[in-house]
Length: 213
Image (cartoon, rainbow, N blue to C red):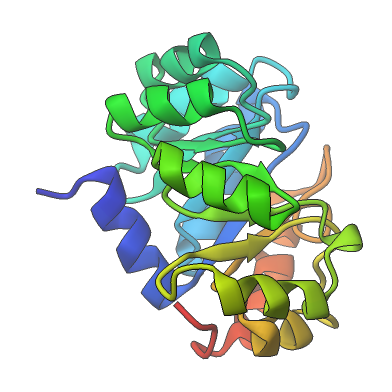
């Protein structure tokens, strides 16, 4: 059975990058998703502060069942249920809220809460988080990632998010990052699907299949 967690595990091995499509409109959803999937990018997040995000999630999840599609900026258990009802299988938050994580776990969804400290990280794992979004990465240097990696369980997935570019990925990777969330360096509102594909290829080239997972 190809569960959300199966998709997530497979994606981490193939290309552990989450595409953050903040500001995506429903009419752009399928062309942009097709551009990403066409180059092998299968983890897609539409933040809930985008225009009509549930419509975009529903369209992409239905059209591309092999992808792991879901929402970012998920702040409540009710929003988790809304995303699940739309067909989303991924829940990403800027913060750690135990009620959000537990609801995602209850619904069988992949959940990546945002954390900054070891205290938050351990609490999120205890609640059942699938992995940890290290956010904002601007405040979590590779040295911090290395320090967290040293104390967290070895299998913990750490994904820095925030101003990740092709220029700083390697340093974070060397510090122990399992993958990354890529936002404005991949997509900004109004960007063409072709440009998104070009940006995606730049990140794929840097990954080269060598990110720790």
